[in-house]
Picture 1 (cartoon, rainbow, N blue to C red):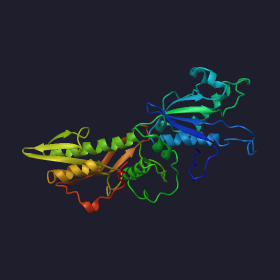
Picture 2: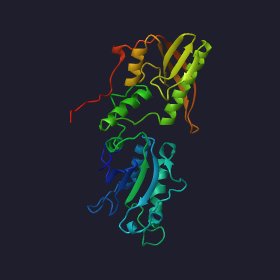
Picture 3: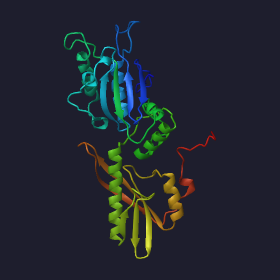
Picture 4: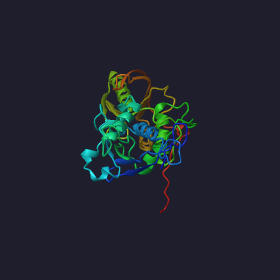
Amino acid sequence: MKLVDDDGRHIDARLTVEQTARGDVEVVLDSAGGTGGSRQSRNREYPLALETLLRRFSLADASLLDVLVESRTAQSLPPEDRRVHPVPWTYPVRLNDVADYPRLRLALTRPQGNIASTARAGGGNERKRIRLTFAVPNGRDLDQIKALLQVTNLPSPTSEGLAPEVADAHLAADIGAGRPPRGQGFRQDVKARLAIEAHAVSVTTTFLRKLGYSVDNVGATQPFDLDARKDRDRLQVEVKGTTSSGSQVILTRGEVALHKAAYPNNALAIVHSIELDISAGEPTTVGGVLVWRSPWLVEEHALSPIAFDYVTGL
């Protein structure tokens, strides 16, 4: 396959994408060679393809586990003699933590000149055939990975003006359906999303305790976030945190079903306008405005599906 660049143009570099039995993703990027611009040149945009791969895999919160030279000469060597060491990085390299992708790309190409080379030190080809191994969380299959690798910066009518988490849900639905999405990729990484959610839960918990409720955080095991009790009253509370104005939030099918059944002993807590700071590497959150609705009636006209399960009958 060939990647497209951020403007939708095919990059002149061939690669293959495979998935191992354990779920890791392996990308083989073919070597570049020949005189640039001539009919004999091949894969002349190798550097752009490599850097684009790194950026696109970062959208999935992937980590680069290993890079091995796969040239014909190198294949007879043990892995330790074919490994590319991207100094100053060490494996695994979490791609969301990389601040300088061009520098990482150079760190992956420059050492290739000394691997399986008959040329004098540093004089070999620095654009050899390589195999990159990535760990991709959340169990994405090969079709989803290939769709993610074709994300571009072309305008996306579905995500314009949406809250980050809503836009990300639209993008995830496109990827899950095997549709190459058009947009800037995921707007929030996993750490940022978890930090926002945890902040919203903390704000809501403090609010409920001031009202005299005992509060248990059950989000890890139940289709709602907080179990709030006071005397004989019990509320099943859905908490949504966002850096946006909170005009739209994402609900799962399980959350909708639960709160339809739980009404009127339920609540929706929206903590909007949370301030997110990622300048120090680890995300931090402050502020936010709590909007409390209890009882919360899930209104059908306010629900908008972004994906469907379709039973084919096969």
